[in-house]
Image 1 (cartoon, helix red, strand yellow):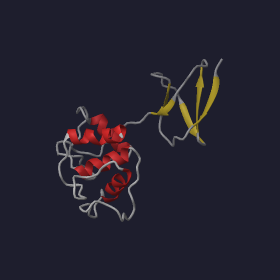
Image 2 (image 1 turned 60 degrees about the vertical axis):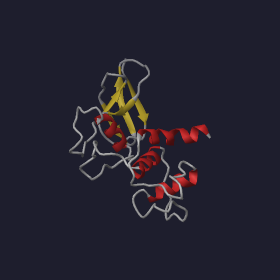
Image 3 (image 1 turned 30 degrees about the vertical axis):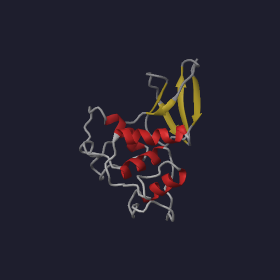
Image 4 (image 1 turned 45 degrees about the horizontal axis):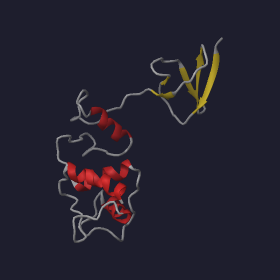
Length: 166
């Protein structure tokens, strides 16, 4: 006996897949995914679409391809330009704090009055102010953050452990 199932979820468009590997014919109408089943079981509906890679320097098959797609789709990064990611370039402290704050969904401070003296007026300025306000970073001393300085993996890991150890 076939049953029609209606699942109300917040997906907008695309092909949908259900269960683990079984693809079902589904339709999306009025905020609901509709599919017909032969038996009742536990199903998961999700969007089955491939990341559209805008970066000419991130090749499919590279070890970081999936990770770049993950952080790009979630707005954690937009790359170094609309068409480049620069995977072989060193990461700066300003870039890293921006990635970190976006990954944790921490909004930048708008028009920050309290900030590091070298925060300037750049894409990372509001994120530096938020990191300072929340105690995520105390900078490098003398009220400076050194946002254009390259960051080491050791320093990156320190940002993750500072909050968990306090």
